[in-house]
Amino acid sequence: MIDPNLITIGLCTYHRQEVTDTLDSLSKIAIPDGKQIQIVVADNSVEANSKTLIEGYAAQSPLAIHYLHAPASNISIARNACLEWALDHSQYLLFLDDDEFVVENWLNAHLDTAQREQADVVIGPVLGIYPEQAPEWVKALDLQSVKEPIIAPSGKIETANSGNTLINLDFIRQHPLRFDLEYGRSGGEDSIFFRQLTMQGGTIAFSEQAKASEHVPLARTEYDWLYQRRFRCGQTHGKMLLLDNPSTFNRLKQIFLAGAKAGFSYVYALRFINQETSQKYFWKLRVALHLGVVSGLFGKQHLTQYGDTH
Image (cartoon, one colour):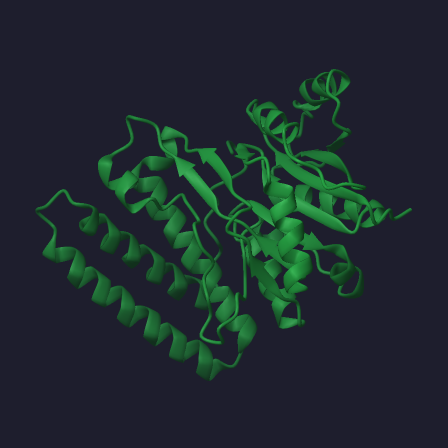
């Protein structure tokens, strides 16, 4: 039974003890008068290894927490499990990553923006907190933060990440979208989902006040990991370019444009080749991004970055 006053918060977790820190954060948020929250934790591991942790936490917490086993090693499976649960119970679903923590006014900010803008989706910023040992160029580029949305040439927000996102489930009930399992181990499943949503008439708004933060693992500040991440993001973007226009002419045109941008970025990277500056890595990672777009347009299989460790 759907309760319009009940709000679902979905956490997808995979071998991550820090999920309890996220739950601690949610226990401190302000809840609007007349509203209630429930938290659904979807465990994406084969072994259900978070079951004891989550159920033990729930037994001592004032929060309404539900554990779901949603195997295995594919984030789309866990996201869809949260979505299905929320569709049966709530008007709104908010996705939060299992290593994020939020400000007290986080929920109010999301809901206020959704109602004021009459938006089907609201996204908030995610701020990365880097370990002291992280390279200075990584901190300078701050690639792990999402401080503002990407505005399309149309002037609208046409896609989103799911790390700090509200979805009005009335839209999903009318347009039965789900997260694509094909991208559940590479990432990009959320970008595809929200691009499909806007292609079907859904609207996305941004709430600067609905802030979330996350501690960035040291392994995710290494150049090789970031290069692969940018390449994979490019692959997803290539896929979305074909969603908009799948014609052979458009595919060839976009391959040419992405290849030209990769070449331009490579030339710029050479200017800084002997300098240990953030600009050097910025342009090298731009090369990775545009090469990923070419790969996606050619239909190559996405890189797998998730599944063994998250």
